[in-house]
Length: 266
Image 1 (cartoon, rainbow, N blue to C red):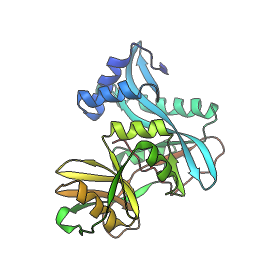
Image 2 (cartoon, rainbow, N blue to C red):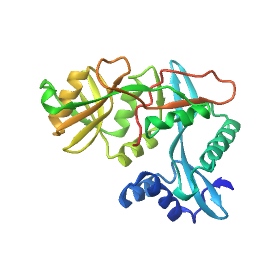
Image 3 (spheres, rainbow, N blue to C red):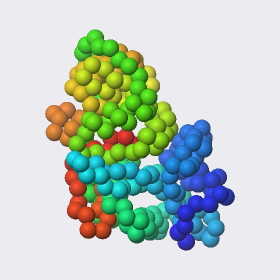
């Protein structure tokens, strides 16, 4: 049976999450406690027991002056003993029908690994945000003095909206939650901005706007680490090509490509 979550599902949903993503208890608690009113949760239940789940966040595909009502599917997971039975496929198709009837134009998701792209392609999703992922040692980054400033979620919301032509946008509340849940910070500097997370072993530049050398220099000046992971345009000379996002059109809307998703809560 497919249904939306109810008040008694939370403990089981946390178990499903941890069986698929192995996050610590504090991370899982943060997602449910702080984000509960920001997403729809669709579950597949065996009797009354949820055995698979997905989380649906509202978003907008912004293309020029046009904005298309869209949904971002997140943290799709099934209990190990129920995998291979087509359960997640059923959940995705249910979500498509439900959201299509509600007037949504597009669905987006981010495969947790490249090998999942073929599965989603069979369900009609197309890669739309291909990037080059490059790991850069700290001693390979130029030191370019620049002033930096920490940005609030509200400040970042305004800045992000003016940085990309074709991108997936979230409202201020969801954007703030995504940054908080991902333990990410936003900085601005002369000529750009960057969203970063990580630790002394590796800092990730999740999303940025600006010249790459100046961006990395600004990030390095604030976040000391052994190496820095950055996602570049797919035409870049360095890095491994990865799929950062996929899209499916609902109804009669044309398929879209070259869409920037960027903020992926992985």
